[in-house]
Amino acid sequence: MSFLQIYLQALLVILSMMTFLWLVSIFIKNVSIVDLFWGFGFVVTAGFYYLKTGDADPRKNLLLALVAIWGLRLSVYLTLRNAGKGEDFRYRQFRKNYGENRYWWISFFQTFLLQGVLMWLISAPLLGAQYYSEAKPLGFPDYAAIALWLTGFIFEAGGDWQLSSFKADPSNKGKVLDRGFWRYTRHPNYFGDSAVWWGFGLLCLGAGSFFPALGSLLMTALIIKVSGVALLEKSLKEQKPEYREYIRKTSSFLPWFPKK
Image 1 (tube, rainbow, N blue to C red):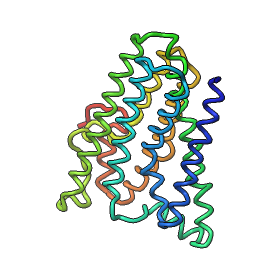
Image 2: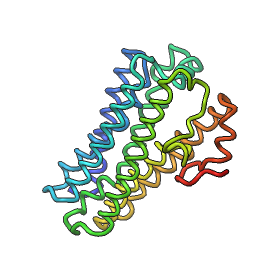
Image 3: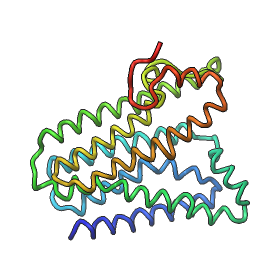
């Protein structure tokens, strides 16, 4: 089976999952579940590629393990963080803007279909790393990928843990977290997420697959320009006056020492 055939089949798998998730969201009136599924969806997609690309080998096993650790941690963390909080404010606003009688079907195209297509496009390096894996043994790009993935995972998981602990303390309400990982970058979780995906991209390059590695670039672009850094910074500057000083002294994305 060709690369393109497997890739197109994965699109059908992803859209089937997203359609099912959309139906569930209608029943429970909560579109936020799409965010909880994001990490797990990549685990399912990577597993699908694993089964469709022939026999197991070290690179395939490594990639599937790294995707599973990253994706399951992210989905479990978001599920626990959002438990009992209802629908996210972004989707509540959309529901208000479009009207309850229309949003149930608009949400399929605006949220579930869109995220499904993005998941499919971004997943390309997960297929490239596995489809061409047998042609090349593990080498320097693969070991560099492990180091980059580990760095990203520590920043993402550590940043999430520090932020959760900070918010759990009522005395920190309205304050800005500027300690730990957050001292060196305003978005350690987003930087970590991007680094994790560049780790997957390096595994793809290590297998001799180049064009699919662009999926890692797409993930980074979305994090910085669309759904992550840009969107969050806009709201934080409005909600917390102290955040402007935090912006002045702290690196936006790549970790670096704070300005004095």
